[in-house]
Image 1: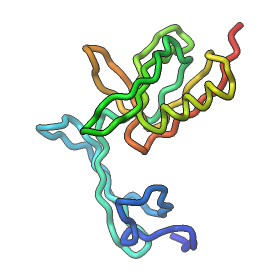
Image 2: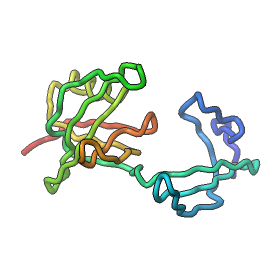
Image 3: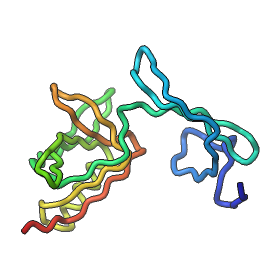
Image 4: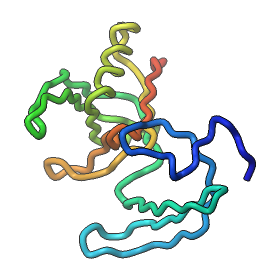
Length: 159
């Protein structure tokens, strides 16, 4: 592995900061069943000094979801763990007409609101990278996965 000044070693990583740039190699991967979370993917990475980091990825996380935003509801402020959090619910519809419930939280709601204020055009396509899938009110729903997600909005051209 080559050294790059903008790359941090694993021993320098602290949990209070986001956006670390690391260079690692995958040294081990396996699927693992747990009693509490079902299937997970276990990964072990090592940096150039040999320091290792063990990671697990739950089956409930998906790489990306994309679709046209439909049934956009108003932004709400709700209490979560005694703190006010913004949330917005909508549906994402793919090109075949299938749709899935979606909920965004926190800064991602502000991103959506900023996009709507700038474009003043409600038809848009949304891409959510590193989404989390779960069940809410008996229905499958995707949501942002804490601060790990990347959300992109583009105005949709409807023919």
